[in-house]
Amino acid sequence: MPKTKAAPDFFLIAVTLTLLLVGLLMVYSASAVGASYKFDDAFYFVKRQMLFAAVGIIVMFLVMNIHYWTWRSWAKIATLACFLLLIVVLIPGVGLARGGARSWLGVGAFSIQPSEFMKMALIAFLAKYLSEHQKNVTSIRKGLIPSLSLVFLAFGLIMLQPDLGTGTVLVATCMTMLFTAGARIRHFVYMGLLGLAGLAGLIISAPYRIQRITSFLDPWSDPLHSGFQIIQSLYAIGPGGLLGFGLGQSRQKFQYLPEPQTDFIFAIISEELGFIGAGFVLLLFCLLLWRGIRIAMGAPDLYGSLLAIGIIGMIAVQVMINIAVVTGLMPVTGITLPFLSYGGSSLTLMLVSIGVLLNISRYARY
Image (cartoon, rainbow, N blue to C red; front, side, top):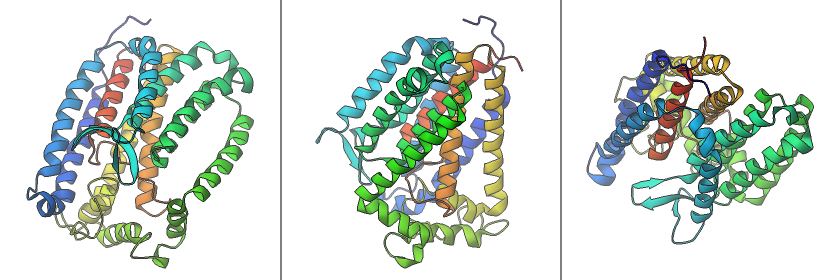
């Protein structure tokens, strides 16, 4: 266990807090109209987001001071607990259904999404397993099958909710870790072919997923139903131009773009702040990812490196999928934009994961 402790990466802290501040500002701007209409309180969503942000920041700084090898010791227990929560959430009357998926546990607005925490638990477990069995990672039988069996078990439970977006992020993150650990390229080709076949089966098995594919290919074929959300998103992004309409001046948030403070908040950013504002947000994410990769490369041991790669890979995959969906490059999947979208579970998880990354930075050499 590395024992040399230094100051955390202050640049990473600054970028994270800047993203968080932009997120709070845009959650308020995107949700004020809808919140006033639904709850008679323009600050309804941003107050809750501020509460989760405050809790998340406190936990982030606490986790920053907990040695990252602690998560190695608790990885099995945390993963088992998350598996149990994924089973509990499927019980009728216990799990809460929102947006067509039974993914939540809790009461009212204050609830958690177990699948979000499963991502972090599985990252910690896979980092532990791969660091202890790196010599077997090139073997399908000894390396990939034991790793992927756990990943796809978690994916299967998440799909029972169903939540294809979160499941996709989970699998893609774990694949990134396997690739970094040294898995063979040809094995990824085989897994990719099997994954495409499985994805085709999932799409065919659910009519609403077929509608999402067809609306992605031609959203104007059904502009009032399956294609409505992406059309309204493009109507927000297109007119934004270089500088946007100005903060708080979005037109699409007036009951045109559904739930603009969650998955499609980037569309509101583009509409109000224009290409410059959207580009600034993307720059912040690029800086965060660059800093995370640098920490992973400088980590003092393989476990720390894989843990950092898992965290930064999770954030990168989620950012890419969200922005691809908002800009019409992918079918709608229901993925939040890290640090910016409204959502307590997602925001808390992201800040906790940054706390782990900051602790690794205290021992990294770069």
